[in-house]
Length: 122
Image (cartoon, rainbow, N blue to C red; front, side):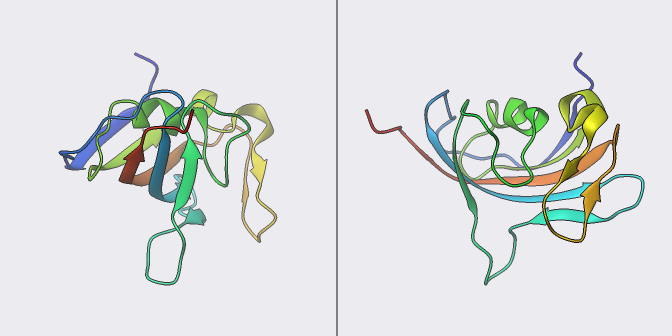
């Protein structure tokens, strides 16, 4: 109903994250219209992203739509996700300091893989 579409590439069998949990993910984000990649942590020398679910501000390349999808994924799972502009970077777009900028009102396509879910430290 919120406009996010996702396709299961692999269903995980591990824990499902809850707000406050530490989630380690690999993420590849592209601008749907141009195909330009603005974040990519897949590959041997790259580090995955570690984030606390529900915390702000978002880490590199993350947006509200990806957080929404993460809530229903399990450790080991992998999805291809289409995020509409209102749950992506909206009217402002985004600048990650690299050569790629996400234009305003861009539809985004991600591949997200949950490596690990850890209960957040108290």
